[in-house]
Length: 79
Image 1: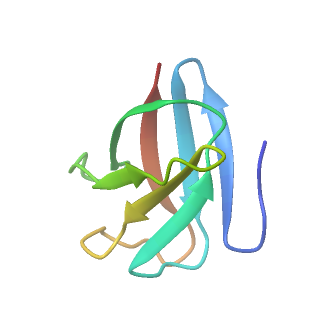
Image 2 (image 1 turned 90 degrees about the vertical axis):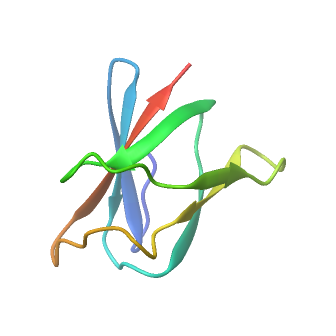
Image 3 (image 1 turned 135 degrees about the vertical axis):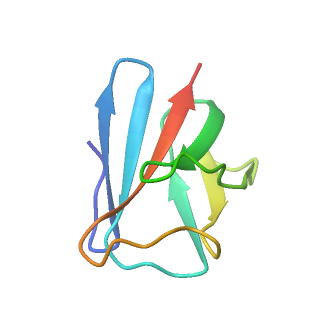
């Protein structure tokens, strides 16, 4: 998977799990797939995102995301 000190990505089937280790108002991440939907793992609320058009980099708006102090997760459905 992809990881650094700010995030990690795990995968199960057509779902990627973006683990945010240091929550901020927004996060940009290179995702190795086309994202169809993004939602909070905790409460299933939608998470706004957009593609930058550069190297599969997406920006996620995490300002309204319910934060888990250890591991905040965004569930990503991919094509």
